[in-house]
Length: 479
Ligand SMILES: [Cu+2]
Image (cartoon, rainbow, N blue to C red; front, top):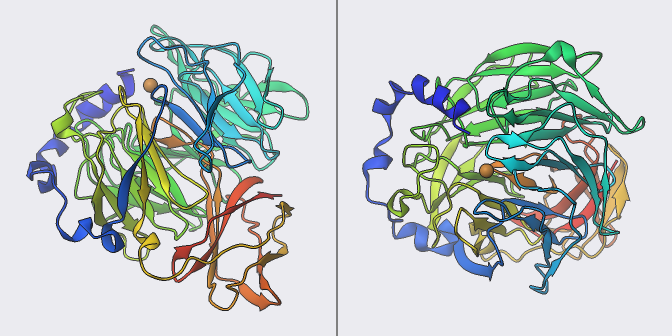
C-alpha cells in the first residue's frame, strides 16, 4: 500500500517547501461561499449501514455500493434508491469485492476485477454483475491477483485491466490483460509488462489507445493491439506523484489531473490528447492541498473537488487536517473557486459521484457512514431548471435524436455524463461530452449524439441545460 506513495514522497521532498499558503490558513469558508448561489449547499444524506468504498450509478438510476476495511467483508452489495431513500441488499458475488476495479460494459452490466485477501494481497477473480437480473457471473480468473487494479472499457467493447498488487513480495501485477468479450477469455499483453502504481488513472484516448494519466510523473499510451505496446507521451508538469489525487476527462481527450501526493499538493494541470504533440501544462491551483480527494465532472462541464486531507502520510486521520471546503474548476478560465464547506471529513476511502438529479452524493471516508449531498450553485441561480419530457432509451453514436422538453426555446446545451463507477478517488467509467449543437423542433429539441472515440458506448446521464442550469437527467444507452 505504501509502495507508489513512498516513491512519490521521496520525489516530493523539495516540493514540500512550496506548499501553498492555503495549508497554513485556518480552515473556514468565507461568507461569500455560504451563499448557495455562489458556493452551493451541503445537506446530510442517508446514514448508511457501512461506509462504502465502491459506488456506482446503475442504468436504472439506483446507486450500488459495497464496503470494505475495518474487518468488513466487501461482498455486501446494497442499492440505495435516491428517489425513495430505500436501501436494499443485492446478491453477493462470492468473493471479497473490497479493493476491486470496475467499469460498466456497453450493455449496462458491471465488470469487476480483483479483490481483497489482505492488504496488498489481491484476488485473481473477475465477475460481471447484471443489475437487471441481480445476478453475478464469474469469469475465468486473471493471470494473478490484483488488489487496487484499474479497469477500462475499450472502443471494441473489450475491457482492459492493469495494475493491482499481487502480494507483498511481488507488488503490482505487471501484466495488462484484455477481457475478450466475444471470446470469453483473457489475453495477456505480455509485451507491455510494466509495474504501474495502484489504481492508476486510465482513459480511453482519441486515438483508441489507453492513456495512463498518473499518479506517476511519466504518462503513457498503451496500445492494446497484439501483445501490447507502451509509448511515453510525456512527464506531467508537476514533478511529484499524484497518489490519491484526482484525474478526469473533462471533455473528449482533455484531462485534468489535480491534487494527490504526500505531502498533498494543491496543483492542477491539463493535457489535450487531441493535439499533435500532447503536453501537460499547469493550470490554477486549488486553495487547498488534498489527498484522498474526489473529483466529479458536473453537467455544466465544471469539475468539483471535494474532501481529502492536507495532512502528510498515506492515511492521515487528523480531523483538523481534513479539507471540507469544496472547490470548483472552470475549464474556460483554468481557475478554481471555493465552494461551501461540508460537515464531515472525507479522507481515505471516501467517494463522490454525480446523481441523475445533478446533485453530488458524497460519502464514506474510513469510519463515516453519514453521507452528504452537495447541491452545486447552478441549482440556486434563480433560473428555472429545464425538464425532459421524453428521451430515447438508446441511441447510436453520432446520430440525431429528439429530446422532448417544454423548454425547447431556452435550452442551449446538452451534456452526456457516463454513469459513475468510483473507488479510491478513481471513476473508472468516467467520460463527459457537452454539445451546443441544438435545433428546436415541435415539443422538444434535436441534437446529435457523441461519436468521439473517448466517449465509449454505454449508459449516460443525458442532461439539458439552460444557461448552465441542468435538468434532471434521463439515462440513455449510447452506441
Ligand atoms: Cu483501500
